[in-house]
Structures are given as structure tokens and as C-alpha cells.
Length: 523
Image 1: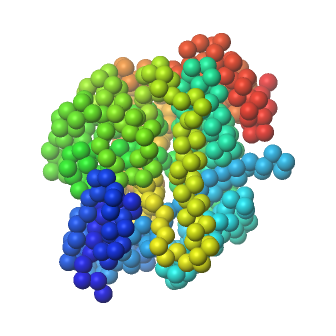
Image 2: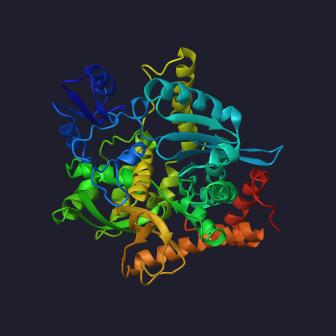
Image 3: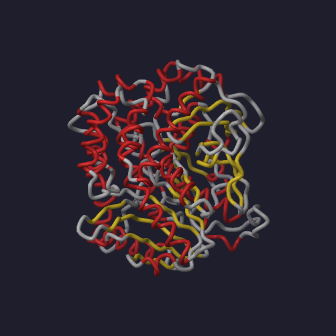
């Protein structure tokens, strides 16, 4: 039994370790590493800011469905070490499309009764290395958990409780085109915003609906927790086409930013903050941040953002690349437009389009950056585990997306009523905004799903921007449903990232050619 526990808050991998060697491997040479040693695991939990809130989905039977309080003196089921030594769920998933068979590819993680994990993908060649590596890890570190991977939807979706889904139809090859085609015309090239986001949305809708239909066929009482981008377009499509489905559309970006905010404010965890936020996915503003005692934290945060944006070292591996650092710094320029709030970083693509394009590398975009870094790292790690026949010495990095989706599953499973930012139908939450719009706002999450909290009226500046962007999202879904060229041209023209209808048409025609194997045929 370990006599010390090493809590790593910022490092290559975060979590609680039982040996100094494990801790050292995570923090040595890592800029801005934050870590401490403790005599008890409770103290380490408190330092990490978990305090029982970071529950373990694999320990469902330890909790009464109506009582969210952990059992006193219950030994934690693991050390809260990221996936390499933990039962926490982490998914590295993607998607694809076979132009011969006309089959979409995607990857999902599915849970049953807290004791089983299934990986599902219909592209066996991409799934296999991850599946094999995970199989080795689970056998070594958690043999009590049944693990499998499959390309058979009936096998995958039968008797499951949660589907963790994130698809990328067309893989990074199509993301690269989403970014580079608009940039040819000096228009923002980004995977979820502007023409690139519209193109990606047109590819994503069918894949998300297919996964949802499998879940409802084989496990109708399950929940689908969906990370699939662009979340706003996907959410609008599922609202219209699957209005009664048990799907919750989510995004990790506000969570990642709140982690940075907590760091700026010298808080142990973002969960020490009570936030008010409204907007659309990748398109929103924080209006209030207090601590749990009610102290207003906004003045201190605003002072920092005014000067530096969110340029503070982040523990989230997913957002440590130089492109993200540049984005964080640029937030100060977005903030200047409304000093009463603090903004989501994605607003730069709509409000500072010319500057974004000016500083973009048209030959090497974010897609290339990810292919050369994060994607390569994941598959190289999997390859190393397989070749060695052991996961010893290997870890998969954990980002905000991984922890947030598990928090959401726990809130649903244990009826915790945890406050979370989710993408839901407005239905009057923002009183002066389209009631059918899919908005991103705080919700209380329990066993019956999200309960949106009232926002009230929003200012004219934000309202106008949001109305324009909602129209883009709705027109995109119209175009997909109606196979309408005109509706999609209107969507691109209306996007604040596109300067004119003529440019919109040129981009659209190129995107149609690039996506002819993925989109419905438009007329």
C-alpha cells in the first residue's frame, strides 16, 4: 500500500499516482507543472477539486439511485489515474466513409451496468489498433471489467446504458478540405465555423442519425451523449428528425475554457465556480462567475482577459498546440466588443475574420497540425502497446472532453442534478430569442435528462449575432433534408464569415465536388 499519493493537476497526464516515478514521468520537463504529495487519498482528491464530485461510472452499484452521497469510508475503486491505470472512461474515436460501399464510419464507446465497455466502429482497419491496445490495457489493469470491440451494430448496441459518440465522417482528409477550400478565397477555414463547419455538418447528420437509430433499436432506454461536430448543426438536425430521442448534444470547449479560468483565478477546480452562460455552440458568452459562497469572480477574470485573453498554460492536452495558444490570446480582442461579458474563443472566427485569415497558413492548417500530433500520438501509443504486448509505460493523454462526458453520464446515472452547459432547445430560456433554436445554456442534469435554467433577455448585440448564426444552421439542415442547392447557398451567404454571395457560390461549388461521396445530391 502506498504511503503517499501524488496529485498532478497540470502535467503530461493528470490524476492521482501512488509512486514518485509515475508522478515524475508526468511532470519532469513539463512547463508549468502543478503537483503535490499527500498522506491520504482524500487530501489528494481535495487538491484535484474532486471531493466526490468526480464519480466513477464503474461504481454504479455503490450508490443508491436516489442518494448521490458516496458511502462513508468506501475505498475508491481506482487511483483516478488517466486511462492507463484507471477505470475512468476515455474515448479516442473518429469516422470515415467508404466511397465504394457508401458506408459511413464512426467510433463510439458504450457502457452496460458500469461493468462493460464496448468499442464500436464500422471501419475495422481503424478500430483494430485501438481495440487491441485497449484490450491489453484492460486485461492488465482492470480484468474485472468486460471489454470488447466490434463492427457488428447488434452486438455493440444490445444491452447498453450509455453511448459516447464522436464521429468524423471523411476523417482528417475531409477536414483538411473543409479548411483549405474557403481559405483559397480568403474566407475563414475552420472545421466547425463558416463554410467548413457547414460542409462538415452536411457530412455528419446521416452518421449521427444512424448511431441513434441503432441505439433505439437495440437499447431503447439508453442515453446517447454526443460530441459529434459541428454540434450546433447536428443538434438542430436531431431536434427536427429525432425529436423524442434520448440524445444530449455537448461540447467540451466551455469546460476547457472554465479550466483555464479557474487557473487564472487560482482556484483548485472549475467546479468551484458557479457560471452563467448563454449562446449557441462555439458562439457564446459568460455573464456571471461566482464562487460557491457567492463572491463575484468576474472583475478579476475580466482584468486578466482584457490584457491577455485566456493566455494561461492549460493542463488540457487537446488545447496546448500553438494554434490554440494564439486563439486564447486573441480572446482579448473579442472581449473588447462587450466588456460586460467574457467570450467563447470561437467568436474570433465571426468577429475578427480578416485577421484570422491573414494569420492562417493556407498550406498547413489545423487539420495538418492534428494529423501530425494528436492523431499520430494516439495510434503510435496503440502500436507500441500491441508490439510490446503490455501497456506498462504507456498512457493516453486525457483532455477536458474525456472528463466532461463521464461527468454527464454520472449525473444521469446518479440523478445528481449537477449544473452543466448543454445544447438544448431554447423553449423560452432566452426569453427574447427563437424558442426552437438549439442554444447552449446551463442545465441541471438528473436521471430524466437536462433541465434548462432561465437566462432571461439578452442584449441586442448578442441577439443579432445569434439570430444570424441560427439561420445559417437551420438553412443547412433544410438543405440536407430537401437536397436543396439554393438553401445551402443561402446558408453560406448568410454566414458572417463569408463576404458575398458570389464568393459563397464559388466555395459551395468546390465543396460540392469535394463532398460528392458524402452529401445528398443537391439540385
